[in-house]
Image (cartoon, rainbow, N blue to C red; front, side, top):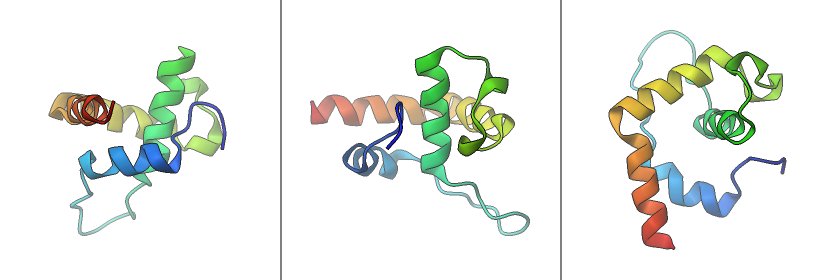
Length: 86
């Protein structure tokens, strides 16, 4: 496991709060765990979105997920779930 990435235990707590893709056509949806790891990498390092490592996917996809999940309250639900666990 690399730095700033979720462990399996952490992923099990967070995964139920992430929305599933509802698209019926087009590309297959991106891996939600990879996208969340990409967002955490950016937040932990303070790097610009364009400096996201290639192993975490396109920076535009990670940014779109970050923007949409933040706007829809997904991150608030994750924080609430983690606070209950702590």
